[in-house]
Length: 155
Image (cartoon, rainbow, N blue to C red; front, side, top):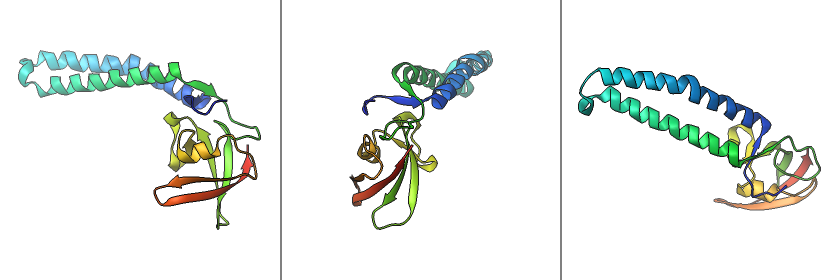
């Protein structure tokens, strides 16, 4: 698996497909109805409801386009499970001079979330981990300087 591609997990693809269906169906209909109502209020040049609804419509269409682009251009991956770190892998690491370990999942940039322990394959940390194995030592630059980790396990 190449590191530089756009990847999403099966779960993220499913969530995006559900969101897209909701946005194209009920949400789009809701905005069109609000737009019709706002038009019925009269003078469009001074109609704040109309302008707000048009802005909401623009944001909706922008989100639909973005989701369609993500679904079209991203490769779907399932969990890693191998010995080598790749997109979908769960990696347990230990920071140098620390006994504490942390578990991260390597994901595509669209679903990265440090709060959930999901690291982008394109982040400096993700790039340093990519292609490595259990026992390997890695280092990467942060704004605070060079950071060193040891890979405890890969699954």
